[in-house]
Length: 177
Image (cartoon, rainbow, N blue to C red; front, side, top):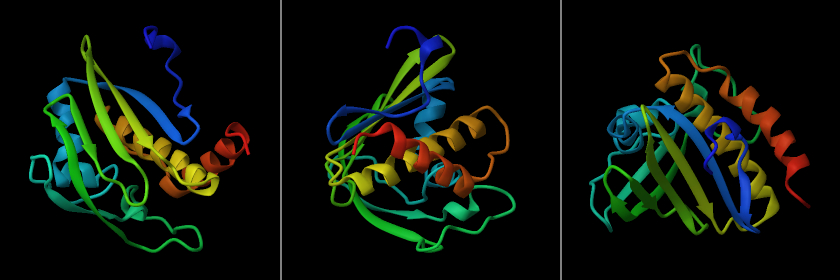
């Protein structure tokens, strides 16, 4: 994508089961890298969990999405207060690329590309197993990245769960059945 002014905040299906979503964030690249790799910073927009920065290193991600906004908010029915997932670093090129195993999917990669004083973050989530998972993941990444962009800009994030529910409906209309 060369024209940053046309950067769409919605994820797209790069392949039938692969979501690609981008955000242009305030730099420098090392600052955004820290938001990807340091547990306390990552907890503010996605999930906590200490990572040993080496390929093959296992780690656990711990989500508490209701705590991403202040005050904490209620979650939709069927979602636990906390979610945990075991993962592993599968690729590492600091501060430009981090790839990790992701549950029963093909994994997630985070790629950072300096763009002047900003950083283009590209998240690629591969091999989403079914449409329901694709809708949840698309809305989830979209909202989590909106929270990251808001925090990186020094602002307070808006309601995570309300945004996620709205975005899930929008992705339902955007992603072919």
